[in-house]
Amino acid sequence: MGWILIIVSILVVWVASLCKIFLAPSSHSKPTFLEDGPASRKRNVLLVVAHPDDESMFFSPTISYLTSRGHNLYLLCLSVGNGDGIGSIRKDELYRACAVHKVQLQQVKVFDHPDLQDGFGHVWNHDLLAKIIEEEAYSHGIDVLITFDGYGVSGHCNHGDVHYGVRKFLHDSLPRNIEAWELVSINILRKYSGPLDIWLSNLDSMRHPRGVMHCLLNEHPRKSFLAMAQHSSQWVWFRKLFVSFSSYTYVNTLRKIK
Image (tube, rainbow, N blue to C red; front, side, top):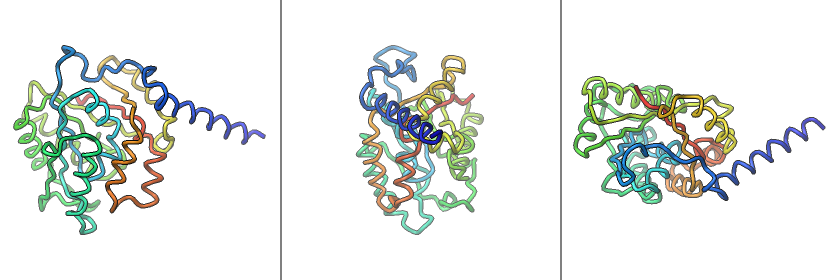
């Protein structure tokens, strides 16, 4: 009897979480991310990821938030994901996914550098990453950078390297007008709690001083599934389960990089 009550309670909260996302977007807490300036000011944002499909698997709520509010989003992918020898296919899949996300394709750049190859055994040079990020940031007048945190959500070393590449750029170049944000990694129970984590993410962001963390709900999770499906070479059964149960499909918590 006790297990039945637990299961029913989880299902009730699950449904309530989905209703919060799908049926009552107006009830979401007023978003404040990048809303601290004049109302008409749109920002030039550079999202920096390691592999094709990172943008859809982990950053969908952030992309949805930025594009729906008219911010000018650039995507920098630092490898073609050639770990299985299908880099050209994965690059094309990334462009198709970006089209679903409503990211302008001329603002998507994918690198295929010999020293930035996909794989757990490939450590990426942080100096090289910082140089690439610097060139992209200054060439597009970027004033906001978004990337992984040091753990990189899944613990993939390439994700962590991208984070430290961004940090090195910020440390070495000391850009005055660029703010940087990292996607907060969470423990495995929260990670696979699906939309349930929107409550914990909201509480977590509220515990911090104003402007340090922002919780972004995905107002269009269906689009996230469609975008991830464009990565057909990666769209195997366990990734379908991941996207369905991953909290990153439904909510992103961004923390300011100091």
